[in-house]
Length: 213
Image (cartoon, rainbow, N blue to C red; front, side, top):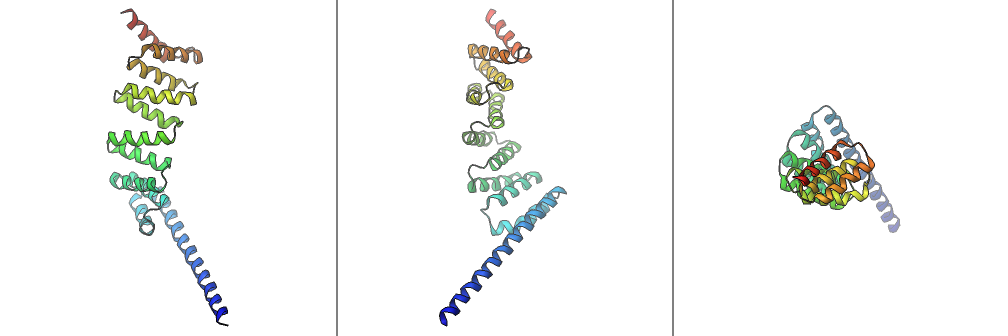
């Protein structure tokens, strides 16, 4: 009889535990749902507030931090955005969404060292990602780190061997780095794919002038 009582109590506790978990999930879903509604109304502060209770319950949760990072970014509170994106990255280290959120936030704050480091971290994970790698290459172009930029585009070309934008960027970075033969070869490769490509023709003309002068 005592054994049946114990088993009965265990069953009741199991049911209650399941009901509480279901209720907690409902609270989470409602909070997330409300945050989307408020975001749609451009009420970013309200959307953040709607998730605050859930964040307090789950401060290391990946998705809650990702949402909080995005909403703080929209609000212009970049310090908090960065904190939440870092927490999301700690939870899911290979998250492109969290990494890209961090990159965009660092760009807004003009923390260029952090921006470069965050992009380099992302491109190590997403080696063949076109946009991320080209973004890093363009950063190197703008900061006159031409050899580093050419290395990035060179590593990306095997994945996109017929992309004329990528090839032209690679050729231009090599040209600026003083690797003129490599640049010339790349621009001729562009013309073998896109015979009337104005950018490649223009750079080849410039390289020819520099040879003759």
